[in-house]
Length: 328
Image (cartoon, rainbow, N blue to C red; front, top):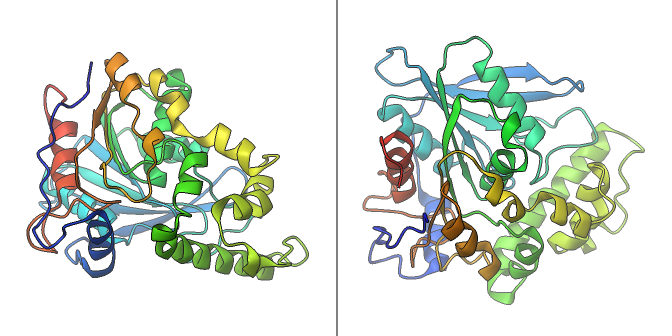
């Protein structure tokens, strides 16, 4: 019954609420000491993915790789990704931070891009990394949207997951996308929503310029929330009838009981993005594989500790869970 009884996370005194715990790490954290090697790989449908590799700092070979999945409209360069990569490297692991289609700094070629239930691309990345036979073990980590993709990947078809994938640790995950899409629209969360919508609308303009005649930008600026945007663009571009159909398919909560590798899910109780339905206590209580930790504090993709550029709790906790002999 892997409900983590108590969390060790304590925020710094100056980050005294969920909004500060979310905003300060996002805007002011820097993680300069990560060296990426970028590789572009062609996908089977004629598109591409940009992968950012980071080897352990001592240069010694390792048989373990950790794959990091970023959040909505993020990329491998975000501080929370770089912080996790640094912690994994320092623990003796190679790391691979992959960028979703349209998120690496260059628009992808196809009309489709990425969505929060797109496990096919994660499966492609896992199998590509395993292809040369160098790695005996693979760990998965993910934040927010990347956590949702990771959980869905592990649970929707456990038989598909390669046996080398042995553990996972995810943070700040909206396991119920429909409820989360409405929760973030509350007045106190409009700052976050407006920031996401600005980048999503800009990507639609870029997509329209890349593929003339294939993207209708009529009234684009009037789409101010996720349900409207997803109904207009995300759903039809990825084969769904509506935003609700997309949310129903993509939400990871319904797949948690199918997970068959030890998996840590850490969602802060004061996360401004997450409604009550994103704390799957009943599933964790019944599963021998899903470890749910719900610290009082942490914000959304926050979990700062000590110095702004130092190690964060999410990184320390992930390494501890992924590398310990007995998970928990």
